[in-house]
Length: 119
View 1 (cartoon, rainbow, N blue to C red):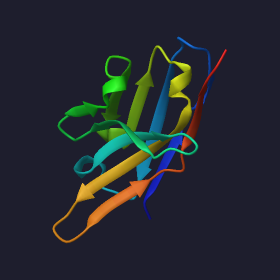
View 2: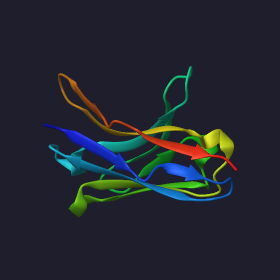
View 3: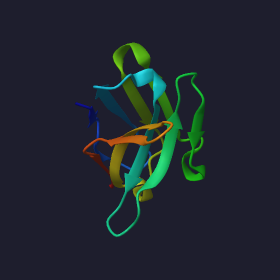
């Protein structure tokens, strides 16, 4: 059974920082593309950042320079360090594990963690 469990969300003031964690179980962590996405009410879920086993990362444009994705393969955990947070970063943040296979796609999601940026 695949589980992705996010933690680290909460309320932070503008300009503050948070670090999200996502602990994965039930998958061979190193062969998946791990990622963070976020969603606000009434909007589609959007990409924040992804990372693959060799450490290659991608970021959505608005997060570059403020957010950093990293992973610890020994702990099957992916992190999202968020700095210089702005009210527009308020959203539910979801962890994702994605793997494209020959005949199917493995696409798993966590339950989400709320991040609220407000004074």
